[in-house]
Image 1: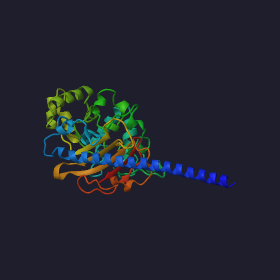
Image 2: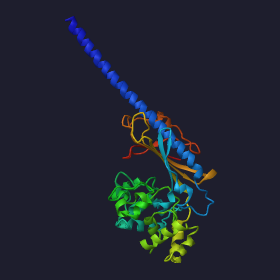
Image 3: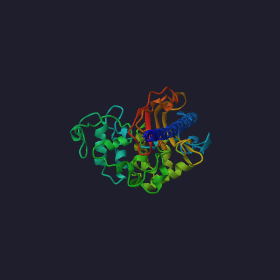
Image 4: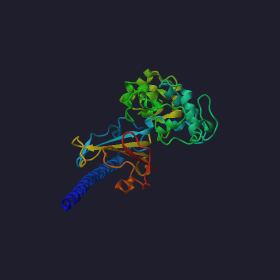
Length: 371
């Protein structure tokens, strides 16, 4: 009888030891991944800081795709990490918030640009533009057709304030997901070349719009679909001629567009209301991955850090700090990440407030800071 009891106790002890060993292994894996996340985050943070001096000066007459900041550099291997940094101007995209001017009134010229952009999707522009206008304007007057105000939303009221993100458009009543993502896999933001083949209907508005620009589109950097929306009678042929010209000789001022056959002073008149040849808002995207091309718990998980700034030099102002991570399978996505070193202020320029969380994105864990 005593032998049976002893064997039973030994069996229980062995089970406990096995469980403890498994938990210790899991804890070790989790700590290894956290260390890798922190390491890759700090590499990305350092990369962002390193390229800040490359941001062009506001005193330059024009900002173009031939400038050093736009050309970029090949990926670098740093301490076992493969790091790629890309700078993109936000003014190459259209900002729907520009439809409401600084005085709080509707800017009809900007509304026309957005309507033309939406029409390129094959969408009925009233059914898209009017509800978005109702979402961002301050009044409660419902636009017809297609508009939506408080009574149309029920308990969840329209925002009546500018969009804080592109995806916020999907909260607007009646807006289909295909408006942003299109019918195919959407290219990454800034992938203007994708629209030279495949078309806007396939990719949607997501890679063509922003909520961070100053509201005027830079004709030296804008993708074809955005250029075509800037003025009436800018057809695909004229847009191609503009792009061909800027590749040879970027525009130093809007009047230089008259050098492009087919562009008239009427075009220039309307373009001066919604376009420019310069940019002032910059997206710095730092991507960090394992240099070996294979992922291990001890190796760096994929990390993408997207920082946005306005201005340059001493006048630079940080706008947002967005972190995306993947390869973190052993971490708890619902845990409080503020205890991690990444919760501390990265301080890219002025000091940064604490992180605020955003809804989880399909590409991995994500957090965003606004300044």
